[in-house]
Amino acid sequence: MAIDYFQLTGKTALVTGASSGLGEHFARVLASEGATVVVAARREEKLAELVADINANGGTAHALKLDVADKNSVADAFATVERDIGGIDILINNAGVATAPTRFVEMSEEDWHWVLDTNLNGAWRMAQAAAKQMIAKGTAGSIINVGSIYGLHTGVLKANYNVAKAAVVQLTKSMSMELSRNNIRVNSLCPGWFYTEMNEDYFSSEAGEKYIKGFPTKRLGRLDELTVPLLLLASNNAGGYINGSSITVDGGLVESPI
Image (cartoon, rainbow, N blue to C red; front, side):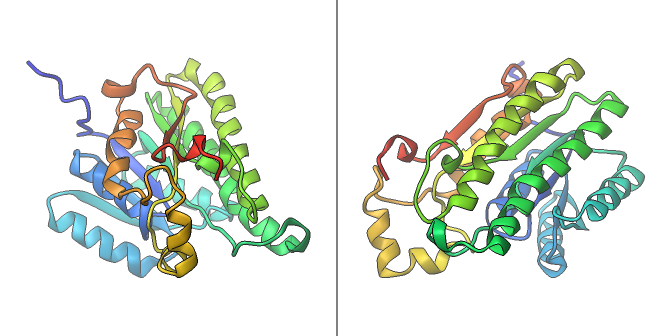
């Protein structure tokens, strides 16, 4: 009998930053493979629409209001999931923010801390809470920290974002070494540029279109091109021996001088 390596029936996945963009796509993908999906974000109305659509198409989804930068919100979220669903098997640590392009010498402390508090501290907070719950329940879990190619190389006018994502890559490696003894895998998925709600204004502009022409592929990535890498890391059948890795999906951009 052929093995369905990506089948996630019986698993529960929590996806942060699920109200749009990559997070919404990740939630739909996991639900399509049979996982019960808990979609979490601050925008409850967007979550309600996503849950209704997933459920209407034969999946199972629940909405959870969550601010990863607030420790009380994170604690309440995991308590709710444990009470109502029993815990999670998969965490997609996707919530993230970015500021407008800013020179390092002109960046405000507020912008610096806002990005670090969400992209790094929030990722750490969610990962720790998920790991504690998985360890307590003896779950063979998978934690996927959504990084960026800017965690692996750098770029101008985004020092706060670059630092946060580089730290997420190191966080992933540290977690993977410690949590492997608990049968929990931790990896990082590092996308390049994909068209999302966060960047649509820029990439629709003349400057954005010019920037894209400098890519090796001369195009943005499609969200469906993240599907298999996500499932590879999420599924213990497919990626059971992948741990501490950072998988780039960027059309070769991380190797270019951009």
